[in-house]
Amino acid sequence: AAAACARARILLERRAPGPRWAEAEREAAGVLRSFLASPAAAELAAAEILGREVPFAYADGPTAVRGAIDLVYRLKGRLVVADFKSERVDEKSAAKIRAKYAEQGRAYLEAVRLAWGGDAEFRLLFLRRPDLSV
Image (tube, rainbow, N blue to C red; front, top):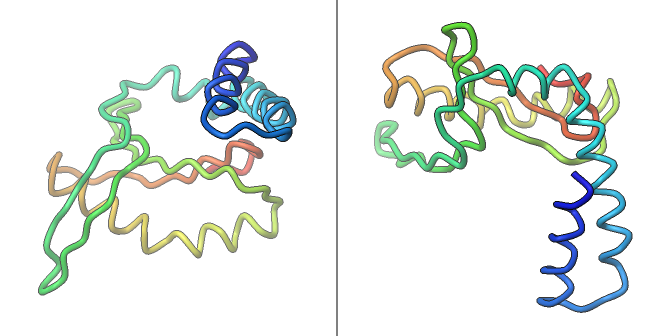
């Protein structure tokens, strides 16, 4: 985790030199370390990954719905659509964030239903607080 964050910092410093990249590297390494130690990460490690950054488009009446799904995986025979969130959350704000992204989740689930032909479950994965992921 630390080595990946260091490589990312070097690349970012080349593109946009500035003093904040070292601080960003430390923060990213901490977030990544915490997430990788979580049950949410263990679940992902046991899952069959079907796609990352999966683009989709479908018609909903006269409206075209399009986007990209962060992650689609299968776990114990069940399809799961996951959306990573990196903002800071606590128990109270997590509920608000879930409500904020509910419509997006419904669009993702419809895209997966149309593409894979089955129902799926939508989960927000809070990178900074994986214990609040659902």
